[in-house]
Amino acid sequence: MTEIGIGLIGGGYMGKAHAVAYAAVGAVFDTALRPRLEMVAASSPASAERYRAAYGFARAAADWRVLVADPKVEAVIIASPQETHRAIAEAAFALGKPVFCEKPLGASLADARAMVAAAEAAQMPNMIGFNYVRTPATQFVRQLLAEGAIGQLTWFRGEHTEDFLANPDAPFNWRCAGRANGCMGDLAPHMINCALALMGEISEISARIETIHPTRPGPHGPVAVTNDDHGQVMARFASGAMGQFYFSRAATGRKMGYAYEIHGTKGAIRFDQEDQNAVHLYRMDGPEATRGFTKILTGPAHPDYLAFCQGPGHGTGYQDQIIIEARDFLRAIHTRQPVWLTFRDGLAVAQVIDTAFASAAEGRWLSVPNG
Image 1 (cartoon, one colour):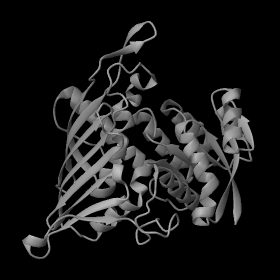
Image 2 (image 1 turned 90 degrees about the vertical axis):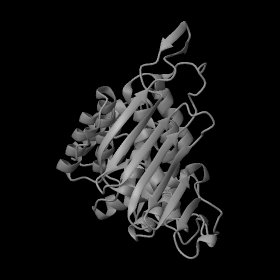
Image 3 (image 1 turned 60 degrees about the horizontal axis):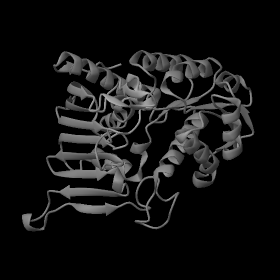
Image 4 (image 1 turned 90 degrees about the horizontal axis):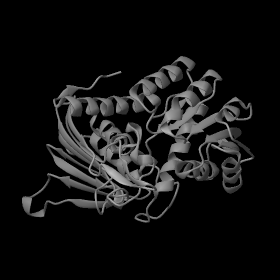
């Protein structure tokens, strides 16, 4: 086995998840490359040192440029704000370093296109962090669909709904400003990615995007919210199947409402991330009187489950999805072969999101660009 020096930019919510994942991935998956937590960078010397001590990195930096340029940092993990993604990725690729970037790929479609161009010009391993499609359950659903288990796909319904801004009295924070931080920039990309993974290319959409609470309490009075709280999208997939989506950060009672339902000519599938270790499968077989949805609990027979637990139904969790991502990124570096999901997959999501905003502004159906 060979060590590889990991540099992490951003030590907050996702930074911690990645730090834990790279500390554990070698033991979980017996990877050929074994991560060495070399350096973590944050926005100040104090916060960088705090993350270093908490997560077990060897060194800390208050400037991401120092981390990217350091020769002992051999792969870069971007878990910083969206507006920083492009500059970091371009700098790392210019030095011949692989990059893993948290979603969304950039703060704009232009950023996403530039990052794909930089990755492909450098011919460096690159991945984007859409972790929810890596659950054993959703990987299993991809297998079922590929095998034709429910026949020709005719309809998809997807949602990503949470309620962290459902209360109108919740104070103004950074999530309430800037398009990239709104619901369509934050939550929608996950389910759009899921739909692309399960159903294929989206050819056209019609969207409506709204702000439910136009102001939120601030320290000196109400502050204007400058981005969206929820949105709905009608879609047509390139296959001909129809689809519909709903995204909300104000969906009262929903905590992790990443859910989808798929209909086919021979059956149907349901999944809800709030019960992430179960898939509900309906097969149009046998007599009508005995047909019904079967609840399938994930276990060692399903993708990537056995590495975590030998017991069926015991379940995997959120952190395990990040460990699977880490395994995939290390594999891409080791083999020098693309491993799904790459920056180009992130660009595909960005194109759908950008088209949704244009559709909402123009009030009509629009085609989604491809590439």
